[in-house]
Amino acid sequence: MRLSHATGNPEYARLRAEYDAAFENLTAEFRKLQSATPASPGLHQRCQEAVRLYHERRDRLAEFLVSKPSPSKDTINILAYQLWERAGRPVGQPDKYWYQAESQLRHTA
Image (tube, rainbow, N blue to C red):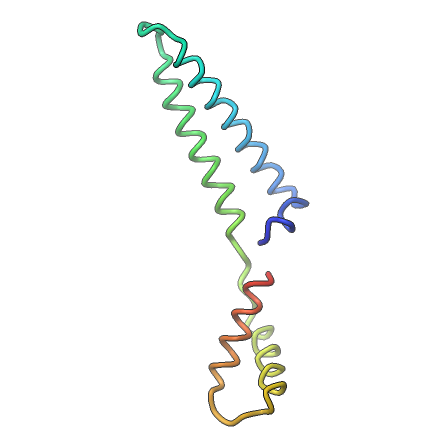
């Protein structure tokens, strides 16, 4: 999924909001840690939890952004046939047009 398509997606908006909130929490906890005295109870554990939550939300957002639906075999077949026809219907190398069609469809999904 391209980012331009993702920005209008409600799932993207939810994941992005969760990521932004986790990042803000992480930076706030680290600011507290930087200005704290060594005896601040529980601050180190809160920072560790903020890091864990940030990584989890970052990874979920990244997974969403890089996931692309796989094109169907029928769709690939139709495009491969069109590419083969455009090439002058050469004999042999049917895989060449299949892989070319599959690649084109994956990059436009």
